[in-house]
Amino acid sequence: MKPDPDRTGFDEILRRVRTAVANPALAADRRLPGETRLAGETGFLGNALVARWQQEFRALSGHAYGPLTPAAAVGQARDLLVARGAHEVLAWDDEALPVPNLSQALAAVGIKTIHPQVNTDPAALDHVAVGITGASAGLADTGSIIVTSGAGRARSAALVPPVYLAFLPVRSIYPDLPTWMAQEGARLLPGTANLVIITGPSRTADIELTLIIGVHGPGEIHVILIDETAADDPMG
Image 1 (cartoon, rainbow, N blue to C red):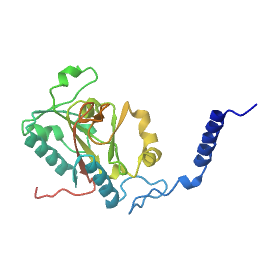
Image 2 (cartoon, helix red, strand yellow; image 1 turned 180 degrees about the vertical axis):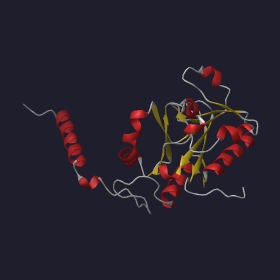
Image 3 (tube, helix red, strand yellow; image 1 turned 90 degrees about the horizontal axis):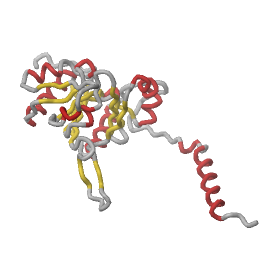
Image 4 (cartoon, rainbow, N blue to C red; image 1 turned 120 degrees about the vertical axis):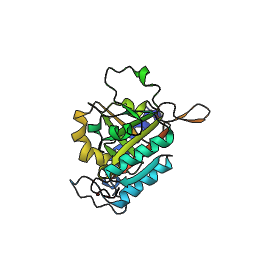
């Protein structure tokens, strides 16, 4: 009986995959220039990692600011919203954000903060143009942010409004997704209701390859980087 050429080819593909997966050479050193993370270490790696994240994020048409102190980050967000003429924002609870007293700062300039609840009618949020959340992590190799939802952290704030603003601590920027999963993800996931990896504004291409921005999510994304170790300027 002659061997089935299709089956032989399939077996050969499987053999090559098994060989490649077992090849330790595939686990190449993926560190970025200037990276100093050691085994088991977590957190911020240095300016090179932040610069790489900013480069990739801006290549996706994202708008990045900072790093700023937490208080300065609130001021940056306030100024952005005032410049856009925003009157309402959809946001996480203040306690869930890595910046102080955001709702109070926005109220001082006439901007109302809406904190959606589980039973909030989504249709009641359609008119809100800006969403604000924190970010659990940034991925330097793709310019992505990881946003996790739960109590006080409504997923709708990151997905429904056409304009989205996130606060990302620089200590939470990782080289890539596998590194984050190994060092932080396994701890974070059990208490997370939903996780979204956001890589730039929403993009959709139809059968004619016409690119459309903002159909299935925000079409404009702003991220304010936060350096929680920096001191605020006492002069203002």
